[in-house]
Image (cartoon, rainbow, N blue to C red):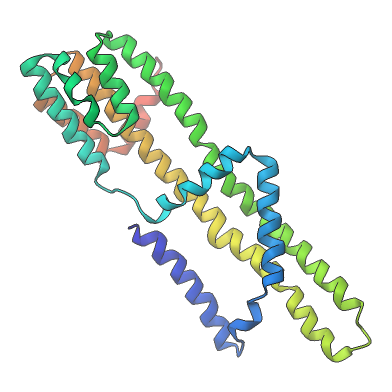
Length: 259
């Protein structure tokens, strides 16, 4: 579990609600189902209009990665590649065909399969880099869904507030209820601004971070399999791949070099 994500949401909610209670308010003042329906329904509709349904559903499925993330996935992948290197050194690269069914990551499985099939290192690198580029283009749309929701929600919150004020103005003959009605109307604005700044935009930022980490691990996978094909010593290979986990800046410098 990602304690930063869970703790961040809890801290934000506790801070806001505590401030409300200290000012003499109560939670019931901001619990308005109608306002929630307007803001979240309108935001979801706008997002679905902007993005294909498949992308929206993919973004919803990715939410679990905000709170649960395998911290040791990179280290486990490194050790798996080193085992492949030792086996290939003893029995040849073709011997890795027996391990294909045990590889869970589709990217690594495809890279190993190409290696077993006798693909040249340069060609394997070209194929898998193209796969990474396609994968990255798809993944970059996921945070964009939440960024768009963060942009729509405050505006729709204002729309909900205006709709509430319209209802209030139609009942000015009951002046005692006007103040209460105005307060209720502005709850929609609270929902819009709060959901954008406490959920949608932070989620987009965290997903970008997660995607960057996954891309980094895929670079390590590719470099590891190509190095195995080139006959690199497993111990040297392990040291080489460890730099991917300990020096994130190294990848940025490597990617900036001309091809």
